[in-house]
Image (cartoon, rainbow, N blue to C red; front, side, top):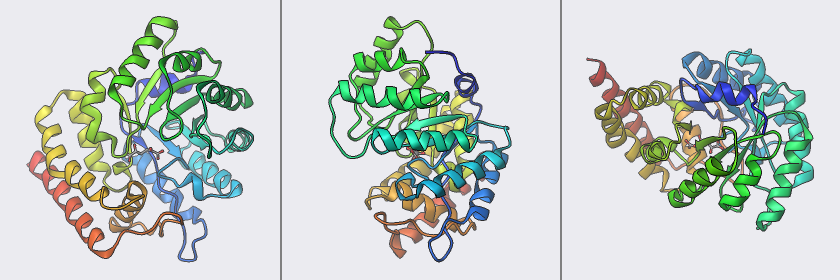
Length: 314
Ligand SMILES: O=C([O-])C(=O)C[C@H](O)[C@@H](O)C(=O)[O-]
């Protein structure tokens, strides 16, 4: 494990990690102008990093050419102000190709998504991530979720692998995370980054922080950056009152609404971006759009969130 500039930049992340949605026009084609505007607004609002074309950015729905164009646009709009990390997924051969495309597009790092479609043993998973990491000089964050769940010894091996700098947890097993963190701490010399990468990660961040995991992804930042920033700031300042008010009045209702539909961790976020005035289009299949009633409920949740913020600053 070599210390990479990306790791150093993320370690001091002074804001939420922004996972932009990918914008499509009315005909469903990639809309790079709107995507650029979305990324630009997020960076200007105070994102600490841009994770382009990951889960929220519908990595699964993009062609390799669209992926590369979107990552390049994110790199351009970010202009070095914060790092850009790009998704890389599917089987090993394709994940390597995505990694090379991300590198060509100027990304600063990779988020290695679970391999499509097999449920593999630890040994095979390890080989997969090692081959992805060896394909470029980009630092790699491994994303634990679904069919990519690691034992502590496997994460120790990942942490010892040249180029692999961190683990993003989208599983939510705190006992496992505690054992992973403990094993890596005792069995490897260097720093390894951990991210709370659960859907609507703010909802569980109090628990993750107590394990020592300070970094978390934020999809809410896509459509309510002021709320995500206020939550991030309150956590950093130890302002429990604000943290609890935002959890109770905004995040819990949002998460309960998100639980009403499959794929809502992405499609509800995209609906939220549209509600806030940026025409990012609809999600591509196999995701589906939230129903009208759910969109109305989302509008009320967002309104309540902003009303809470106003009360805080009054
Ligand atoms: O790959 C992804 O897009 C994610 O898992 C990140 C999301 O931002 C997730 O943490 C969330 O919904 O807040």
